[in-house]
Image (cartoon, rainbow, N blue to C red):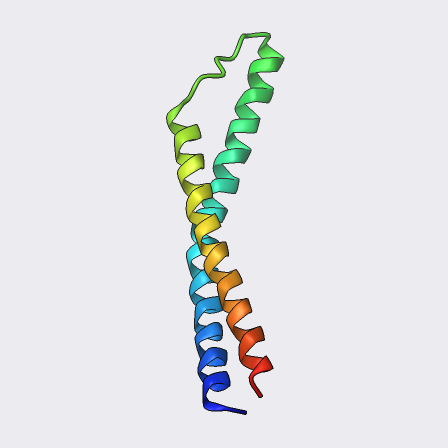
Length: 90
């Protein structure tokens, strides 16, 4: 294996670990907020009340958390790409 391939392989593994670390926290918090929001919607529907579909603090937080999780996912994908390219440089 060439030196360039080895460097890309190591960099790819590091990017994969960093990407998973960056995406895990925001994704789990996003899922929790989404579940809470769905629960409130079911409760409002059961009560027969009209739910305001405007922007709330929770919806803004979900957008931010989703953006952070996507960024972590992109870092993960870049790491996978670096590993694949590193393996091609044998």
